[in-house]
Length: 127
Image (cartoon, rainbow, N blue to C red):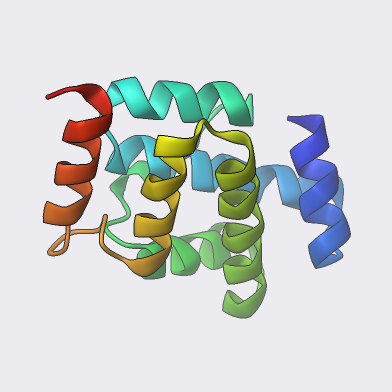
Protein backbone atom coordinates (compact mmCIF):
# COMPACT_ATOMS: atom_id res chain seq x y z
CA UNK A 1 0.00 0.00 0.00
CA UNK A 2 2.89 2.33 0.67
CA UNK A 3 3.75 2.31 -3.04
CA UNK A 4 0.22 3.39 -3.93
CA UNK A 5 0.13 6.13 -1.29
CA UNK A 6 3.44 7.50 -2.58
CA UNK A 7 2.06 7.40 -6.14
CA UNK A 8 -1.11 9.26 -5.12
CA UNK A 9 0.98 11.80 -3.19
CA UNK A 10 3.32 12.34 -6.12
CA UNK A 11 0.60 12.70 -8.73
CA UNK A 12 -1.70 14.89 -6.65
CA UNK A 13 0.66 16.80 -4.38
CA UNK A 14 -1.18 15.56 -1.28
CA UNK A 15 0.47 14.57 1.98
CA UNK A 16 0.84 10.84 2.59
CA UNK A 17 -1.88 11.00 5.26
CA UNK A 18 -4.38 12.63 2.90
CA UNK A 19 -3.43 10.22 0.12
CA UNK A 20 -4.01 7.27 2.46
CA UNK A 21 -7.47 8.56 3.39
CA UNK A 22 -8.34 8.86 -0.29
CA UNK A 23 -7.09 5.35 -1.05
CA UNK A 24 -9.15 3.97 1.84
CA UNK A 25 -12.25 5.72 0.50
CA UNK A 26 -11.74 4.25 -2.99
CA UNK A 27 -11.17 0.79 -1.46
CA UNK A 28 -14.43 1.06 0.47
CA UNK A 29 -16.31 2.16 -2.63
CA UNK A 30 -14.99 -0.80 -4.61
CA UNK A 31 -15.92 -3.23 -1.85
CA UNK A 32 -19.43 -1.80 -1.84
CA UNK A 33 -19.79 -2.09 -5.62
CA UNK A 34 -18.25 -5.47 -6.37
CA UNK A 35 -18.86 -9.07 -5.33
CA UNK A 36 -16.63 -10.28 -2.51
CA UNK A 37 -14.52 -12.54 -4.78
CA UNK A 38 -13.51 -9.54 -6.88
CA UNK A 39 -13.28 -7.00 -4.07
CA UNK A 40 -11.01 -9.42 -2.21
CA UNK A 41 -8.56 -9.45 -5.11
CA UNK A 42 -8.72 -5.68 -5.32
CA UNK A 43 -8.14 -5.48 -1.56
CA UNK A 44 -5.06 -7.66 -1.97
CA UNK A 45 -3.64 -5.33 -4.62
CA UNK A 46 -4.43 -2.18 -2.63
CA UNK A 47 -3.29 -3.67 0.66
CA UNK A 48 -5.32 -1.20 2.69
CA UNK A 49 -8.25 -1.06 5.04
CA UNK A 50 -11.37 0.39 3.51
CA UNK A 51 -13.71 3.15 4.54
CA UNK A 52 -17.12 1.81 5.53
CA UNK A 53 -18.71 5.18 4.69
CA UNK A 54 -17.52 4.88 1.08
CA UNK A 55 -19.23 1.49 0.67
CA UNK A 56 -22.54 3.37 0.57
CA UNK A 57 -21.57 5.52 -2.43
CA UNK A 58 -23.70 4.59 -5.45
CA UNK A 59 -21.48 6.04 -8.18
CA UNK A 60 -18.03 7.41 -8.77
CA UNK A 61 -19.60 10.88 -8.64
CA UNK A 62 -20.97 10.14 -5.16
CA UNK A 63 -17.54 8.85 -4.15
CA UNK A 64 -15.78 12.01 -5.33
CA UNK A 65 -18.21 14.10 -3.27
CA UNK A 66 -17.70 11.86 -0.25
CA UNK A 67 -13.89 11.98 -0.52
CA UNK A 68 -14.14 15.76 -0.76
CA UNK A 69 -16.43 15.99 2.25
CA UNK A 70 -14.44 13.60 4.47
CA UNK A 71 -10.98 14.96 3.60
CA UNK A 72 -11.70 18.62 2.86
CA UNK A 73 -10.20 18.28 -0.62
CA UNK A 74 -11.75 20.10 -3.56
CA UNK A 75 -13.80 17.74 -5.75
CA UNK A 76 -11.29 18.11 -8.60
CA UNK A 77 -8.53 16.77 -6.33
CA UNK A 78 -10.77 13.97 -5.01
CA UNK A 79 -11.45 12.97 -8.61
CA UNK A 80 -7.70 12.87 -9.30
CA UNK A 81 -7.20 10.57 -6.29
CA UNK A 82 -9.88 8.24 -7.68
CA UNK A 83 -8.26 8.25 -11.13
CA UNK A 84 -4.79 7.46 -9.75
CA UNK A 85 -6.06 4.57 -7.60
CA UNK A 86 -8.17 3.06 -10.39
CA UNK A 87 -5.25 3.43 -12.82
CA UNK A 88 -3.00 1.64 -10.34
CA UNK A 89 -5.52 -1.16 -10.03
CA UNK A 90 -5.90 -1.51 -13.77
CA UNK A 91 -2.14 -1.84 -14.10
CA UNK A 92 -1.74 -4.32 -11.22
CA UNK A 93 -4.82 -6.56 -11.49
CA UNK A 94 -4.95 -9.69 -13.66
CA UNK A 95 -6.21 -8.85 -17.15
CA UNK A 96 -9.92 -9.76 -16.90
CA UNK A 97 -10.32 -7.54 -13.84
CA UNK A 98 -8.88 -4.55 -15.70
CA UNK A 99 -12.20 -4.48 -17.55
CA UNK A 100 -13.98 -4.09 -14.23
CA UNK A 101 -11.94 -0.97 -13.52
CA UNK A 102 -12.76 0.40 -16.99
CA UNK A 103 -16.46 -0.17 -16.34
CA UNK A 104 -16.25 1.66 -13.02
CA UNK A 105 -14.51 4.57 -14.72
CA UNK A 106 -17.23 4.71 -17.37
CA UNK A 107 -20.00 4.49 -14.79
CA UNK A 108 -21.30 1.13 -16.00
CA UNK A 109 -20.71 -0.46 -12.61
CA UNK A 110 -22.80 2.03 -10.73
CA UNK A 111 -26.43 1.98 -9.74
CA UNK A 112 -28.62 2.05 -12.83
CA UNK A 113 -25.87 0.84 -15.16
CA UNK A 114 -24.75 -2.36 -13.51
CA UNK A 115 -25.95 -4.87 -16.10
CA UNK A 116 -22.73 -4.66 -18.08
CA UNK A 117 -20.73 -5.09 -14.90
CA UNK A 118 -22.73 -8.17 -13.92
CA UNK A 119 -22.17 -9.74 -17.35
CA UNK A 120 -18.43 -9.10 -17.19
CA UNK A 121 -18.09 -10.37 -13.64
CA UNK A 122 -20.18 -13.44 -14.40
CA UNK A 123 -17.76 -14.30 -17.20
CA UNK A 124 -14.71 -13.69 -15.02
CA UNK A 125 -16.07 -15.66 -12.09
CA UNK A 126 -17.52 -18.43 -14.28
CA UNK A 127 -21.13 -17.74 -13.38
